[in-house]
Image (cartoon, rainbow, N blue to C red; front, side):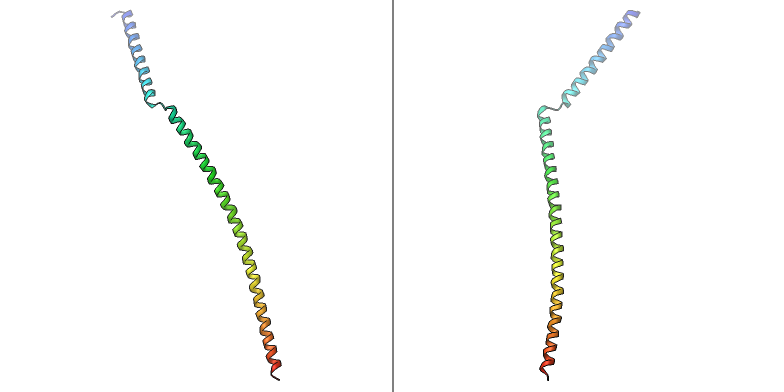
Length: 108
């Protein structure tokens, strides 16, 4: 085999290898390509996910505000109950003192 034949044979082999690699690459990309409808569906799902996250954040914020309001209302109610119970104790004590005083005055 002469030098020219060797160079031509090597060039042909390299060209065939290049062509096979290019064809394999084209074939792989052809089968793994994402269609425009798939991309549109993915974008739609991403938008719906974003909206769901915003709704969740709004719900969490509302629940935190409502919990703070209810905690405040509970604290106020407990304070009012405590004040009422103290007033009732004082009224009972005064009523007992009045009964005792009336009984002492009625026994002459």
